[in-house]
Length: 68
Image (cartoon, rainbow, N blue to C red; front, side, top):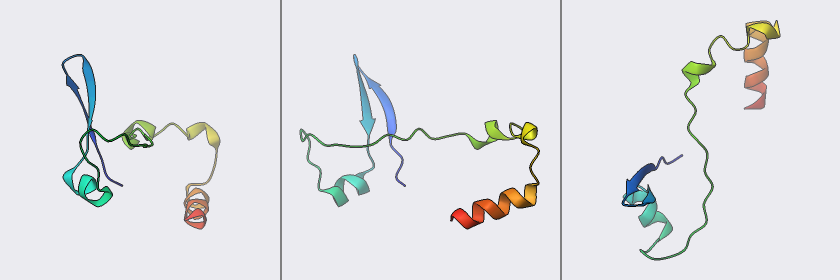
């Protein structure tokens, strides 16, 4: 999944897309486009948060593999 940078430009906030994405989607400056935003999650913050669940770690890994 491509990653874009959010930057400040004057009073506006700008979403900077990689040139590869611009080229593949044939996007031109000034065009109106639709997109979805998924905020990148820092997985390190999640470690240790599920201790209260009382689930076997191996069972959890097996369940995750089945979903893939």
